[in-house]
Length: 238
Image (cartoon, rainbow, N blue to C red; front, side):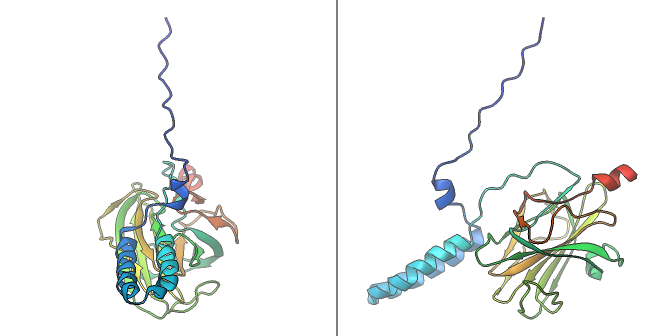
């Protein structure tokens, strides 16, 4: 007698217009949007014409801090994109010493976020926060340059198999603050939101030695979904 096959669960994915017009926003964005709205409300009571300026700014602030739902497949061998944007640079670089991922040149993938991209950042792999290092600095263009003087937050996550993945939030020309509340020892899941950068900025990811990038220059990346690299090749070699 054949065993009864398990029933396939029906999809409950929201595909309504609300998904696209009213996405959730990051908690940090709620604070900022609230302050902007309060300021324009006060001045709007005195000068009604100011709403013609205020409303577009409030709408843009809401749009900027949006945190749309992302689905990250469970694959322990994959490094996912930590940011939405464009892959602007793939090159061999010596990682910062503070990341504790070695002093040999590694492949670094850079993703540039314009002011129109989602600026919520997601961890590229699952694991434990191994190292954190904040560097204050200048606010220079990061669109196509390797400025080492920019403000940045360096992060290293140690995966369950011991592999350490380093990635960096880099503030850009109009960025004014990097937000990263992580602490050493925090547990993270691939695709989990870990911070954001306000306005134009960049995310760098260092691939482990021997791992080749799975993206090309100019490619659009989606945080938590785009596969930057597959580490299963080096796992098999071991």
